[in-house]
Amino acid sequence: MKEGVKSRILITGGAGFIGSNLCEYFLSKGQEVTCLDNFATGHRHNLKDFIDNPNFRLIEGDIRNAIDCQNAVKGIDYVLHQAALGSVPRSINDPVTTNDVNVSGFLNMLVASTDAKVKRFMYAASSSTYGDSAGLPKVEDVIGKPLSPYAITKYVNELYADIFSKTYGLETIGLRYFNVFGRKQDPNGAYAAVIPKFVMQLMNHETITINGDGNYSRDFTYIDNVIQMNELAMTTDNPAAVNTVYNTAFGDRNTLNDLVNYLKEYLAKYDPAIADVEVSYGPNRAGDIPHSLASIAKAKELLGYNPQYSLQQGLKEAIDWYWNNLK
Image 1 (spheres, rainbow, N blue to C red):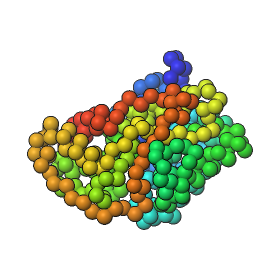
Image 2 (cartoon, rainbow, N blue to C red):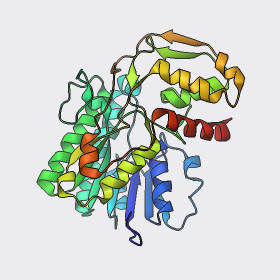
Image 3 (spheres, rainbow, N blue to C red):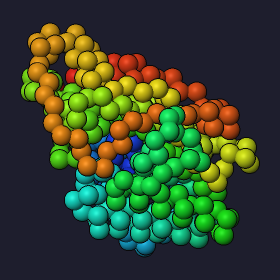
Image 4 (cartoon, rainbow, N blue to C red):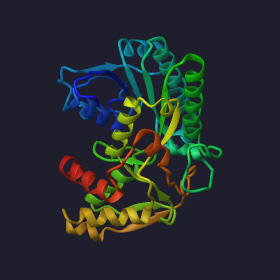
């Protein structure tokens, strides 16, 4: 951020995992932050460290409600749109609600942002957009067919953003998140992400179950890399860098077996018994992509992206947070 320049930032889904980390970061930089959240998947405890910050404003509302969106964008310079119903399995179980939130809600935010003349609209896109494209690493302009209702919604977001930039002049940047993890990520619930879920199970000495044989691989991306990308997208003054999408990742991949081995190794430093927790294997999940690896060349070239945290470095930070906050 430019020193001494205060911006007014709206973060939708600001009580969620990624959103609350973005709120905290931009408040630490002296920015004015508004959070719009309906607490369907976000948590009030994610806001506790800054709820009383005079630069912070919370709006309880739903992106499916156009009036809520219009109220939230009043006087806003930049929108960081994180609000969505995540999870491939959730979308398979309930495609209608996933579409309502991720497509209709997204469109509401685009319209409201255009009408309010915000400077730029950044949004959480997804690596699921690559679908059945088999090539590695994933390059932004080569995608396949979506493999889940969730993936369809995130691809539709990109199509709508492109139309709004071309038709209405709204600057947009989509960030295709690759398996983001880190502090404040919820370990509970039917659709918990794999890393916090495994961490909690290991801390409780519970057998963990890997979907498939454990050889599916992912480009696991620590939250601080994602924060860096959002800031770069928001602040770039490079005309060639806007109205497009970027992979938001570390640019490396690890198998689920690798992941579990790292988790056991790092957690065993806190509790040696964790090294002996059993691992079992179950069926592959419907809609899962076998392998995921991002090319981050485009983000490096156009935004100056330089991710600082590998999976191993990020896990050490995340495990320290989980141990001290959830044990």
